[in-house]
Each structure stands twice: as structure tokens, then as C-alpha cells.
Image (tube, rainbow, N blue to C red):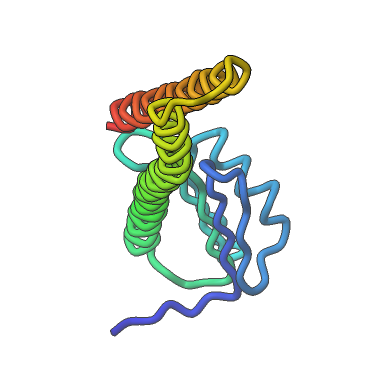
Length: 181
């Protein structure tokens, strides 16, 4: 194992527009961002400071400042490359976790809607069967028959609404899954 004696480190992550500091790093925020935007690496031997633009492929993703060190330039470049890979891997992992969380959220939503649809349809079926049974029993006045018909119509309407909402939700879930893939 090899360790690098440093007085401070500044890391600017362009994805998050955030600066992270460890130890002493004078003027780190302005200097580190300036290196990123100029996309020019440089070393300041008088302050024992190195600045590197962090690249992933050909894309700049951040900047690194190493302060108060005696590390050779090749090692500083290696540290910058490893840091860039770590930032990119962290970003991709966070993205993957977000996609997985969204998938689980959609599964829970679908299960909840299925449960709610079942919770509505069961009592509606009972109402429809019971009112139909009353009609079949006969000996009802015209007004009673009219009320039972109204109960049947409204129960059927609620059942159709529940089915329509469930179908719409499932279509949205399928479209969301297609857009994630």
C-alpha cells in the first residue's frame, strides 16, 4: 500500500455542481471550478498544489485539487483518473437505484390499485346479486321495482368505472415501463 501525504483535497463534481473539501485547501472552490471550466490541468510547485480536470472518456465531469503534496505528476494523473471513474460509477449506481426504486414504486401502485378494485367490485357484486334476487322474488310494487332497477344501474356503473380506472392504470404502468427501458 502506498499513501499520499496531503494537506488537503478539493473535489468538484460537475454532475452535482458540488464541491467537497478534505483538510486544508485554500481558495479551493474558485480555483477548482476554474480548472474545470478552462479544462486545463496545471501544477503549482511553489504551493505544492496540483489541479486536474476529471474526464470520463472525452467528457469533463469534475475537477480535483491536491494541496500540500510532493506527488509526481504521473501519480497525480492516476489519482485523477481513478477519481473520475469513482464519480462516474457512483452516478451510474445512483441512476440504477433510482430506476429500481421507480420500478418497485410502480409495482406497489399496481398492487394497491388491484386491491382497491377488488375491494370495490366485491361489494358491488353483492349489491347487484342481492337486488337481482329481490326482483326475481317478485311481489314488489312498481316503486320498489324502480328503486331496485336504479340500484342495479348504479352498481353496474360503479363496477364499469372501477374496471376502466384499473385498465387505465395498467396501460400507464406499461407505458412507464417502456419509457424506462
